[in-house]
Length: 410
Ligand SMILES: Cc1cc2nc3c(=O)[nH]c(=O)nc-3n(C[C@H](O)[C@H](O)[C@H](O)COP(=O)(O)OP(=O)(O)OC[C@H]3O[C@@H](n4cnc5c(N)ncnc54)[C@H](O)[C@@H]3O)c2cc1C
Image (cartoon, rainbow, N blue to C red; front, side):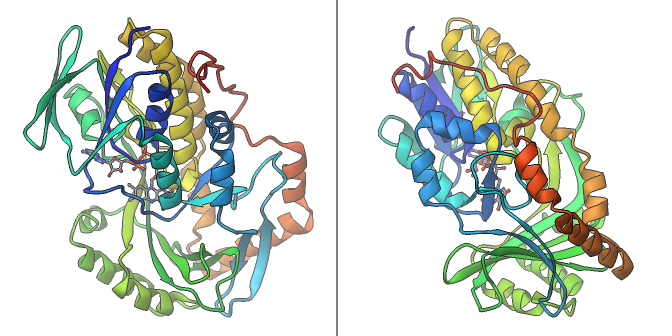
């Protein structure tokens, strides 16, 4: 197999995972990342289901384990921090998982692990993006934001949910790729206090709002505000400067009870503020000739699914496997990748998130009390333990393919 010259746009989780497999079998891989340095930020993310098996096959499971967040489960609390129900995490290494997964890790730690595992045989270029590109029969000509032009055998768009590579390959009349769920999710870091422990705590307040805390270090906790809003006005606000977004959140949550006011004070001074509308990315196809999409760029299942990182690891493994098997016929490789992975992604995306959100973000205090009682009963009946014991965490009956040719140099 002749080595290919490959450009990956985006140095998050998906891009470096793909680079890991491709560089390992001798391809020449370059990653361009728009951010001026390794973008090792973000809050807590999960690795679940078939994604764990991919990490095992990468040989990174021990280093990932060494960085896991110490979180024992999820609790619903009231304004006095009294626990209404607790669903413990399943840390046994097998069986179904619940809201707090066995593999909970800070996004920054995972990004650093992937960078360390690839930096010696992958070229990283920070602070640069793909301005535009042209496809020819046997190569892609790429024009970079720093004025350079170069040619590659293929270009991978791993540039996240707002992917510019996706926009460039979709036909002009393609339907809008975002499935909007009418929910926003914001987070930032606050100094840890004695109220924060190793539980993922959820406090519901009327009006379809929730305040969440998770603690990932002895000194810091993550604060999250989640709320329903489907208006165009709010949508445009979240493209406005961060200070306006913070003002909006303060107005929406001030006085809502529990730790809300403390979190609002923390929001004013944090360096880690992040807010986004929760969307899924759905497109009819993930490639065009020699350009292919990977991870959130092609099929973001939404942060609420807790499966975005898993999908990016599984997608990278399948794409690398198919590129290696069909390195002389890349459109065929991409068609196989899509055919193999689409059922997995469909399964992830077809969860009725609107229904889940309807139940999980109640509008009234009565509905909140009913939700808390239902979760308490769920725990009292030991249903989480039955889930751990009698179900699998895998997505449907989809089987991770065996690309032993990709793994030959392991
Ligand atoms: C800063 C940040 C924080 C996040 N925090 C969370 C979180 O707290 N919880 C959660 O569930 N998910 C979070 N995510 C999303 C999560 O990382 C992904 O859903 C998942 O890991 C899939 O990874 P991905 O590589 O496909 O996308 P991403 O992780 O989004 O990575 C995409 C990468 O591409 C880069 N990029 C974007 N546009 C361009 C461009 N034009 N040129 C070059 N590079 C570009 C981005 O800077 C980023 O590094 C976050 C993503 C980012 C970027």
